Image 1 (cartoon, rainbow, N blue to C red):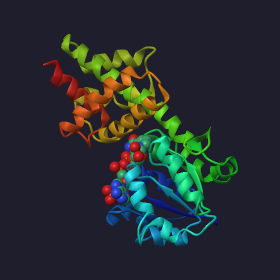
Image 2: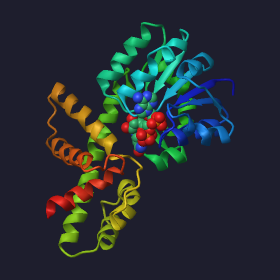
Image 3: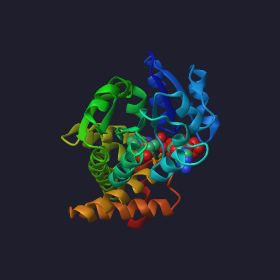
Length: 291
Ligand code: NAP
């Protein structure tokens, strides 16, 4: 395929997502702040750029999968930043989770330079990223989303058209509000059952045998049973997202009482050194405050 794709952000999500682009037959070069993390892609045949600027000069389209707004802005700016190398007419696809307000500002920033922007955060974690089964929540010009849909579908099973730039991120906030509440709900329920003398194994088997069986709970069952929380979706990311969600709720007037409550628990997790653990580690906070 002739399209030259640049990908920045070799984290938990970025590595499998970019691998799927490569396997899908696209020309790919990658770039990461810590350059050694590009190794798995280079081993598979991807090229590498030393700076975002160098990547932007080569690529037709650049995809970002970074921690959040600060990381995105730092990658864009400066002498070696993306904007220094991106010629007008090219497209930036941001798949990092950012606030809707940041996505809208980014769209304006890029259109002032005659660059195109797709706001395309994802629903799904490490496993769906590996399987190319993410749900991509796209906001932007419909013709640009159409143009890049085949590329997006190398990483995902579905592209949801959410509206203009900013609305992809609004959808992501909507989904992650539920995600944060559901995860805390599972942990609260398992901890409650354990306090009643039931084993986590039996509790999980019971939940997964009934109407509450869902892929999220199935994915986290080993964590509930073992008390080990290797990061799939780090706790620091759900805390960041809930902070954005509460800001949006403040602006729109939406009532989010459970959102406020679970945000405080995830924040306590950050304070207890759980930032890089999976967000299911909020269970350990519930265990502590049960004592
Ligand atoms: P991650 O493993 O923590 O990776 C973060 C990436 O951002 C790394 O490549 C890191 O570079 C880079 N980065 C951080 N700060 C930077 C800065 N100031 N300048 C340049 N690069 C910077 O994160 P992830 O789990 O892949 O998640 C990436 C995004 O997807 C986040 O917005 C997250 O909320 C979202 N998301 C994650 C999941 C999930 O399950 N993990 C699911 C859906 C959405 P270094 O390697 O140099 O640190």
